[in-house]
Image (cartoon, rainbow, N blue to C red; front, side):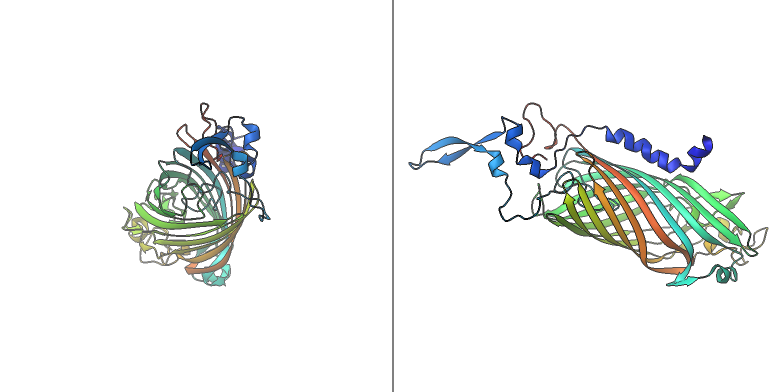
Length: 422
């Protein structure tokens, strides 16, 4: 039993979060097409408006909402507002940081399980054989599996301002090969860095159902991930550590556009590694740019395509254990002047440019709940030095919005639902 739990820890964590989320209150009615029949379902859903009669006197007349909320005659496709609502989760891929901002006075809870696999060596844009790499280093990685589970919680104070926090748990498993063919492994796991962020709406052509909106992200990565991972008293290489060891500010801009049933957008972000950590090194700055397009086939089903690009700068400095104590160098007792034992300990072998293609689907099993599955493959990789190359990434995300009583999408027993239904 203990072996099963150890080998499936991330799957079990994901199930642990999914089950309670699925049973949270489903208070969002998001399908605009159902609203056309609103009058039939709710006998009291009528509003009173003032109209002028022919003599100029004002009289009250009732307006049937089901007649007001009708499809245009020339509409040849279903009219959708995305999953959940016109500006919230479900209108952009959920792997984008800051995706899924809820309506005012609503909580957002998102849990994600991510599996990334790297196989084979690459130098720059060219493949490099294991034999060639072992001609330079005593040992080199063959492959690596990285699992990451995360949980993020956010709250929208208004149409314009949202705050969120994301915590991560990381598992890294790397297979090594030495000269002569002997294999070994490196392993690390634990909490990763914690992200705090704010999202501010800069522009929207409509607060309720925007077809064009721009938002700004501001935040910081808090160094809760360990940079002390070791094995038999020797520090593990940089890529096997769980965090950066520094407080890293970031900024981003997101654009979202829509014309039912199509959704599209772009986002750019910059994360700064502004100073050295207490180990005397700092990871490289990160620049990201994403572009996506989505098609809503049904009220509860959306397909997505995404281009994800990323540039990571050079690692600067060296960990004290490597530079001063000789960890990761050729000699058994550790000599800082000797050659590096593996390319993993060489700071020149970090960073580079990557471009990935991601395809996914979003499904709404219940109102206010979204299940997002994605699969990514690399289109381009230009890596600094000699590194493992990316093979694929797969992820599953479960997202839920929880309207509080003050939300315009909540069920108010005294008033009934908002006549727009979201």
